[in-house]
Amino acid sequence: MSTVQLNGGQQLAMKYYTVAIALFVAQILFGLLSGMQYLIPGFLQGVLDFNVTRTVHINAMIIWLLYGFIGSVYWLLEEESQTKIVGLKLGNFAFWLFTVAVVIVVVVFLVVQTGPGDDFTRWFVNEGREYIEAPRWADIGIVICVLIFFYNVAATFMKGQWSGISGVLTLDLVALAGIYLAGMFYTTNISVDQYWWWWVIHLWVEATWEVLVGCLMAWGLMKTLGVSRKIVTTWLYIEVALMFGSGILGLGHHYFWIGTPEYWLTIGGFFSALEPIPLVAMVVHAVYDSGVKHMKANNNPAFAWLIAHAFGNFFGAGVWGFMHTLPQINLYTHGTQWSASHGHLAFFGAYATIVIAMIYIALREVRGQQSFGADLPDGGWKWKWALGLLNLGVVGMSIALLISGYEQSFIERAVGGSTWLGYFTAQIHPWFVQGMWWRMVFGFVTAFGIILLVWDLLTIGKHNKPSAEVISPTQTASV
Image (cartoon, rainbow, N blue to C red; front, top):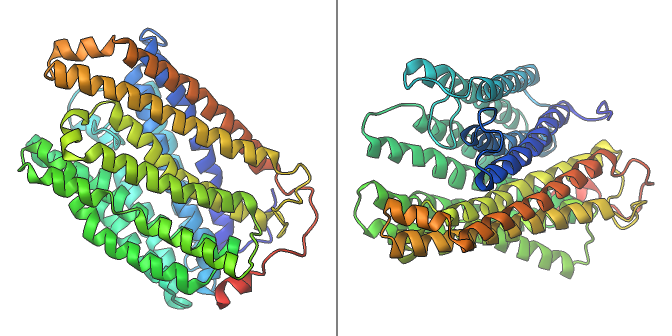
């Protein structure tokens, strides 16, 4: 696709989006392999072991979302700041540095796979910490790339104009680079080590990513629906306030498991559930306001994914998280497939959906400001089916894992007393096995969804005519 009509930041964003989608496909492919190995342990044994496919599956998810967030910020940067991006060459250098590092890490995961428990393995093969297995040299590379990204964003807004969105976004990027450092040192005390590991897993994700997607949601609602900047900015401020108040305390639902007092379960469980509420309120308020003012969306797939994000975030991260981290429940569910159920629904609902929405917003510009409304030549069946299959697949996997997790909590934890006998009894129970098979079925539904999504992203808007009903971009920032 041609990107010559785009500004510098948008051209860089398209590179990030391209890699993001490739990694999204890889995430689902390796997820299918991992799911199959759960059911047939001998599948690909000795070639691609379960620990390798699962590592690639999880890390591909984190990295493709990071690519999507960075691309989205580069996409809106020049328009929001009303000036050209500062340090574009440095930004392009960071993109290629990041991409080469990701390729090398994946090749090492696939080819080398394991190593002795020494410093060489930690620096060059696998750090060994779940979800952040990338070796130490790659950690340093990630921090360098995020710092360059921060420089691009902060310097551009300082040169141009500030807004509520840009101010929140810039401050959030400081935390995005800073909190990742918590996972870059090693201690011999497992409790202390886990404490800082959770800072990366939860504060890096639950705090900095949630604020970042709040900025993207605010900007996306103005672009697709033309809603008031005042409305989205107000809810964005409320989200930041709740994030500071709830994000750090919400982390406490893990602390009991490293020997801290039991009251942390209650504090952590309650405050964890508060984080996504402002995002839902922002969308409800924006949709209500657009209805009162008879506004019309100019980009149906992007708007549909924004709606999916609001409710996916609320149910996946909020309701599912609250249900899972309630103290009386968490005592039995921690580390079971119940956790995996929450993880699947939360990451997809809170983060994957907003990145897909931003890509559709970008594609409308790439395809020459075409309307992505009801006048699409094919009626928009591909994006509608992709939306339906991806959401059905992920929700189906989450419910299937929830059933297996419930069985584990009951048989292994409540009845078996968390013994090895209880563990293996739970693993062969029909409810557990059937839940894992259904997870596999819905995994294939998700795979069909990603195939349709990629097909639609490659073709949407290529042959439709410009529509007179589209909202002027200037309308979005003038209210």
